[in-house]
Image (cartoon, rainbow, N blue to C red; front, side):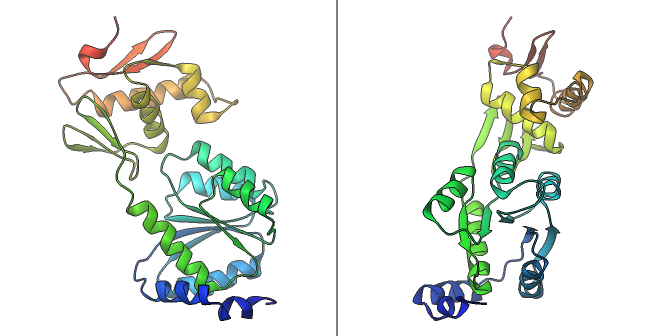
Length: 254
């Protein structure tokens, strides 16, 4: 590849190579890239190191995988069919419950392009052509940055939601909920003890195209069954015709 030798000869790359050589961790990685040759090169380099890779070759498929599966990091091209990388990155940041690092790959190398990528929510930005050793090292840095970040925890009474790991506990007991329910709980806990309207919850989950009131009602039923039914104190309250409120008993409005 033109320009690749310059990267290999740079002092900066020596640092990335040494960092990569110390890596023994295995990650699940989503590659959203429409260039099959680039995807295959990345796979040939990363899969023998034990990493598990999924691939999407257009923006729409990439968004579906990013929101329906759990990944340690997403590698995202900018020029994609169906939905460009900037829009896709924004969608992931707006919709995803669990924070996941996003590394953008692109041939566009102006400062304006990079700033646009960071503004969309990217954590790092690499310009093509790139050295695979440096890509591997940057993946390691970005994943570790998330893993070592102090846990941000939301608490309402004895209910705790870890925002880094997106794990939920009540009275020290782990509770399993799907992605949509965790997102609803996050919004309710952030607003607690205030009420959150049905309209705001539906927009946060589905944007301008909510599937219907029965879907949200089903999610709320599941949340109540998981976080309230097994416990003596009820935290979730329905305000009929308006929305929902999550609060300790002494914080519930009349």
